[in-house]
Length: 149
Image 1 (cartoon, rainbow, N blue to C red):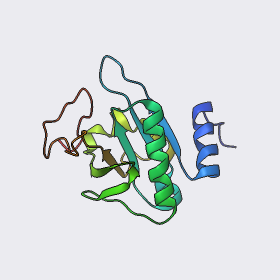
Image 2 (cartoon, rainbow, N blue to C red):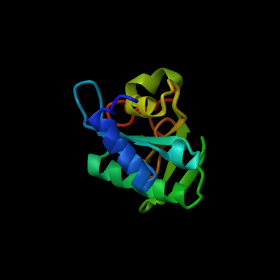
Image 3 (tube, one colour):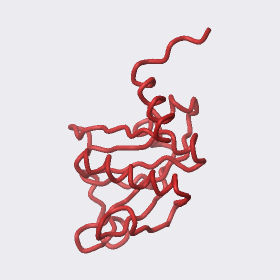
Image 4 (cartoon, rainbow, N blue to C red):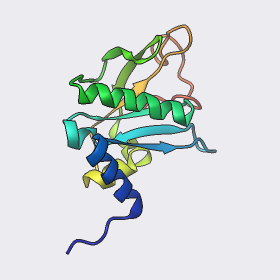
């Protein structure tokens, strides 16, 4: 008989079974900005998990749910994809997450999948002028670090 799941993973599993994914939200602290990421997009739809930084937690949760619904409906995102269907009035960009950031930012997804390496993309949002960090503006690691560096 398998050991019982930790309560936090029980909730993840229940949400993945009911909705197709779960959103983990991590508040900002002295070490960095708040972030949120999905668990279950890979298991349910064969799509990389998504991670976002630096917006209010409820906003990041809503953004990831919109993206999850698009994935559920057949949309596929990859590195370099831009989408205007996720954030109202703005385009988002999908970027690479280097392996060295996996443990720090995707721990519950690793535990859920049983894998050390989780397929995942960073969902990058622009400033009010529509400019993306690292492309048209400097990166502010206190708001939205880029995990491709």
